[in-house]
Image (cartoon, rainbow over all chains, first blue to last red; front, side, top):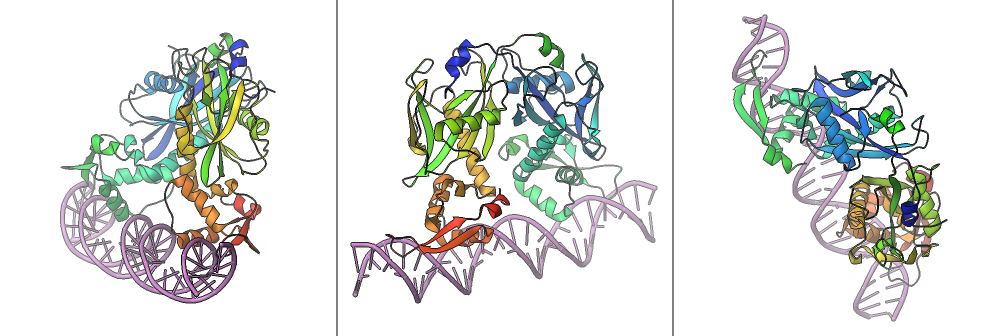
Length: 226
Length: 226
DNA sequence: CCAAAAGTGTTTCGGATACACCCATGC
DNA sequence: GCATGGGTGTATCCGAAACACTTTTGG
């Protein structure tokens, strides 16, 4: 057995496929959601999956994932993060496919997902209502969600799920939806305001009792905490 | 542009190589070290690199990495962790190679590294003396080290770097070497003993002033903290 | 015996948590 | 006007950090 196979690699012919799959999280109707798509063709025709696609010859996996976001929900320039790479020989029923999973957070505005070629449906599904997914995508999603939870402990990613202006209550609901437990309203407010990247717009949200103040994010300052 | 390319994948022919690279950390002579190997053949002949190898048809990437550990330092059954996957089209000068980086922690005993085919040298290099590495391996190593530091904050991985019996002083030195800063001796002792997976062997280490007590790990209990 | 390191306990501080009141708005 | 929710401040708790003395051993 040779130790370092790069030389061998250059002389052998492989035919692995390499793909990127995306867990795209959004928040709407008071629930954390993930974008899932339904396949129209084999394998796994009729099954829901995470959106994914093959890496092209001139792309990195990150660029593949970004392209998917552009095509599917029409967003550009939002950060994506690697979850992990899945390489079980049997994870794809037809041939060997190694996939890298990413997750991304998108604002609910703008993007209505479109089913495209090979797909006959796409929807924002509540995280706790996601059906069994095709391939090993249930595992990918579970890992992506865990990575998101983990990351939220350390940086205030959640604001990437909120519209341009929002109340602290809404921000808190996003946090609670992600970490899965309730937070104290006052402690949350103190903690978030201490980050110092929120700007009080001095406007109040209409139609809500109490007259909550609307905030927006100072993107420059937010960068410091990512 | 199609969104979900799996079907296309099954009909097109790709020839990407998929490899696993390992940052294998060890601790000896009061320093954190990483195993690096020197390539004897092109590309990067004469350059130091992280050990790596191609994934076989019947292996996962994790199994590839484990195989490397077995071949190179003759250790089995130690945990490995994914760092990330690197897919820049230009990262390999000859052809497209996508690699997944892992890291592992090995005890210093047993394993003297062997240079094997395609390699003419292998050594345990102090982390702060690692030369510029071939490919993008300097980046891989930096990321692996960061992942290790991150992980050590949350679980007491460091004991996988220590011999079977050790003093608390030695354990502390491993911690300090990884996180890169000094710790208070008493606070460290309290924190580590609180984990409750260390067993006092009731023996004292000879040849050292103060007569420090030797400890060993209760592996069963350690599992709970990984 | 003395220098160097190991073992032990207490105090302090800061961030996180728990908690109560008054104010603003929608109905 | 009243019920619902928003805004603010304080007491408490817990884990982390800072810190000093005694005991053991090698030389």
